[in-house]
Length: 122
Image 1: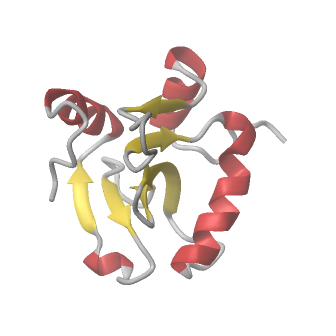
Image 2 (image 1 turned 120 degrees about the horizontal axis):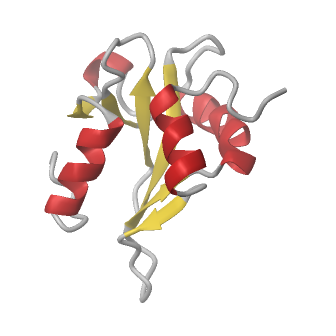
């Protein structure tokens, strides 16, 4: 099976052309902050873990792609949305109550850089 099979095109482009995973704005001193974009080798394993953690069915339209260090949350892409919006997901809320972070992966990255790694959607 192709490692990129089933991944949104925006993820595939990022992981194959920009970086195969990334650790952004990571707090080196305490490890309590940062964004971990999953690499291709771990991507499908992470899907299984986050589906179980978020109590989602196997056919969920949400693809987990980035862990938020210091929190029990993950950023997901809604593949049922044409724009492929980004949401912050956690097990305490239903998907309908998750916070929308950006309209696309590109928008999220742009806004994250502009805010210098701050969680701008809070």
